[in-house]
Structures are given as structure tokens and as C-alpha cells.
Image 1 (cartoon, rainbow, N blue to C red):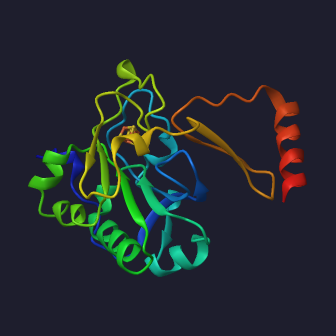
Image 2 (spheres, rainbow, N blue to C red):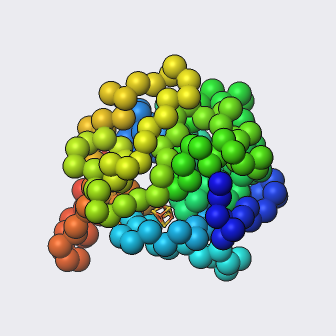
Length: 215
Ligand code: SF4
């Protein structure tokens, strides 16, 4: 069962998001819209995204589900991946997001969570979400069990649960472990399950220039 400290944040239809990546190839099969939820209480040592932990209004980006898709869903996207933070802390909004993604946008659905699937199934708040998930990757990140292969998970204790027949394990071996995304304003973002090291401002400038050529 979920711990006391993991009680659900809200039942609001709004989403409290940390960030959105409109197109990624390293967060699940194909080209995916990636949505990072804001808020997590686990504090796993070595967490790849500690900025997502605070559950404070000043760190949140409230967004309606409809506007998420109208703002970020591009042509050619196969599915949505939801990560965090802890998506299940916003179970009501998570369920609506997944339902809309599957039934209205024809997207496949992948969710990363620190909860185990057993905890999700036992929770009246979390379990309704499972109906709309194709693949659930469960369990909190363990820095002592880092994933050594190209499988799209942070550590080997995390399990991939194929809840529909849409994907198989081989679909979760990513061609690259990590991506560097460069926005038109020059903002550089790393995503995926590998380590990205940029050695100094010179490389950052070079990457920005290369990106500028390809836009
Ligand atoms: S559950 Fe995920 S987001 Fe939360 S602390 Fe652990 S690794 Fe970080």
C-alpha cells in the first residue's frame, strides 16, 4: 500500500507539470510526446530530475488537459510518455490525460512511476489509471542497480509491465540512451537514461549553431 507520505495531492482536472518535450526518441518506442509531472516525495538518491520534487505552487505549471495537446502535440507523434516527478500523485488528472491520449488522440501510453504495480492496483485513486496504460515502468530508482543496457529504465529493479499487446520488451531498447534537445532560444535540455556531459560553453555554442543550421 502507498505510504502515508504518498497521499494524493489533488483531484483537480488541471495538471501540475514540470516540463513537456514535444518529441523524443529515448523515452519509449517511436517518437513520443513526453510529459513530466511536478512533485515527488521519495527523494531517491541519485534521482535524475530533482527539480521535479517540490510540491509548491511556485514550482508548478498548471495546465488544462485540452491545452496540453493543442500546445504540444505535433504531427507524427506515436505516443505519450508520462514521467516525473510522481505521476500518480495527480491520479485524477493522470487518468483524464491518459484517457484523452488513447481515445481522442490515438496515442499509445507509457507511464513511469515510483510506485509498484501492486501498490497501484491496491489503491482506489491509482488503479483506474491502469486501464489506459499500455506499458507501466514501476519502482523507485535505485542508484546501486543502474541499468547497464539500452533498456529504457533507470535501474534494474524497475519492471516493465505490458498491460496491452501494443508493445513487447524489444520495443523498449532505445537506439540512443539519451538526447540533447536545443530550443530555438538556445535552451539546452538533456533527456533519456544515459549521462549527458557537455564540456564547457564552447560545445554548447557549437550545438546551438548546428541546431540553428537544421531549423
Ligand atoms: S521516484 Fe523518480 S522522480 Fe521521485 S525521487 Fe525517485 S527517481 Fe526521482
